[in-house]
Image 1 (cartoon, helix red, strand yellow):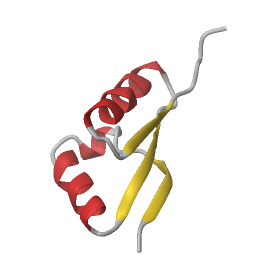
Image 2 (tube, helix red, strand yellow; image 1 turned 60 degrees about the vertical axis):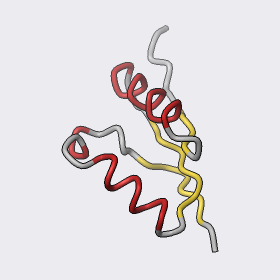
Image 3 (cartoon, rainbow, N blue to C red; image 1 turned 90 degrees about the horizontal axis):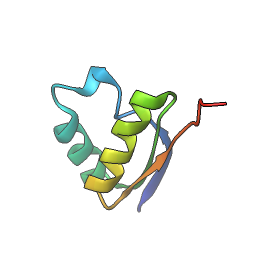
Image 4 (cartoon, one colour; image 1 turned 180 degrees about the horizontal axis):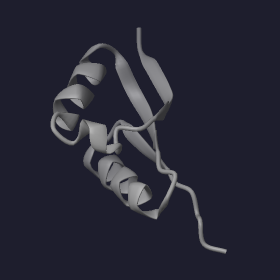
Length: 66
């Protein structure tokens, strides 16, 4: 069975030390699609980087400029 995580924050600084290991473990556990959410400009940059690095991740970013 495959799972789709529709709202994740692997861009958060709490994952800085072991982000890749956690992402790998989640994927191997069956979460084969992940939407990583950015809630400000800096977080959104990291979200885009993660989505560009992992084929199974998608970026959802918030435009805070008005």
